[in-house]
Length: 280
View 1 (tube, rainbow, N blue to C red):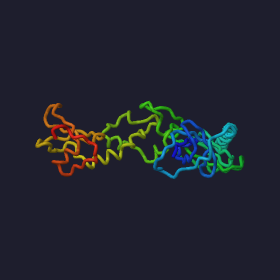
View 2: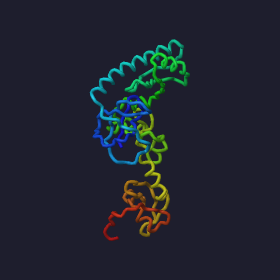
View 3: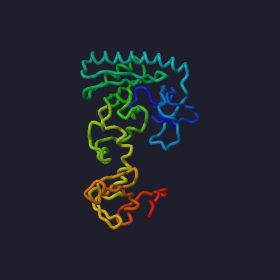
View 4: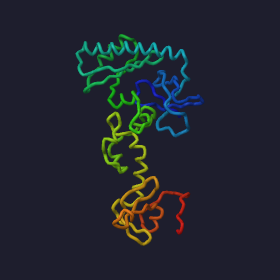
């Protein structure tokens, strides 16, 4: 499987790389909804379970494909300008056309626009189809979608997830994902698009599953005959911090597999390679 960004698409799409030698940055001709486009590879092909039905890579792009792409880019500008002119003619306010992508066979054009509210653009579609004699669809672009197309880096120093990974927005991301991981909601959890960062969801299921097995925070547990209070989690280590006294030095990091021996209901993860400390 390989992720490929198609011009104007919100996030990269998942494709079957077959036996093609594709590397990050390569251009390839791909088939989407019966039309062919030139996309850019954003991830190294690797074996993995597809999160959606993969599309087909036709071939690695050639010089002829690049020449045709340049022609179609200019053709798309003509369609976009005509759409903007029609909006003025029909006196439709609050609509701005921001781009147009045309398939390699000139059978389909997708025109992107931004609008302040929902508007009826059926007349614009009809006129564009009559003028250019091809299938035309209009797609409204939000700020978050435009951010993914523009790409760039976030505060982590890495490229935006929505510009390189096809599954980054396969499910909604919200503040609850940050709270689930014990992160206090602040400006740091928001990406350059203004929405909660996609990475807040990547480990959500891990934290959710851990909390189902671990004791609640502020609950009392027993360890080696002493009673203590659970004050924090260490999910990666499958452990919890337990406070046995008033000083911070009285706090201990205890794995769930040891805590489960004296506390019914605590369920450790399977850790066959966990090393037992000396003396136990």
